[in-house]
Length: 86
Image (cartoon, rainbow, N blue to C red; front, side, top):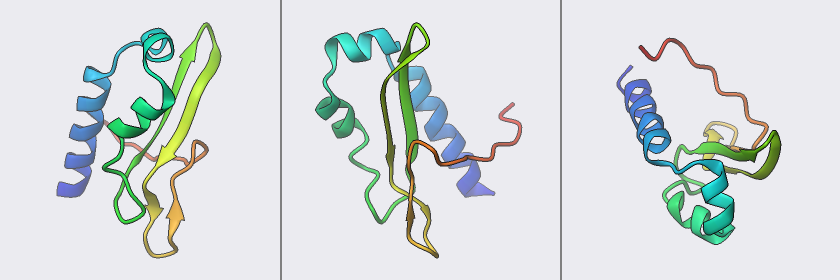
């Protein structure tokens, strides 16, 4: 339960601090985005992200591990199940 709360809190923090997608693509190269998520290695939980503008995907990538038991990495296609975040 505590892990879920921390994961939600981290996601909320990233979403609140993240600039709009247009700013990401106009001012921040892919290497900068990767450096922000450098904490998510092949030994940690991570996230998937996608930056869109006018309905077009500009950048998408997965970081970290989705399933430690089977060593499955997170990809942009990874499904995350979420409950209420209120």
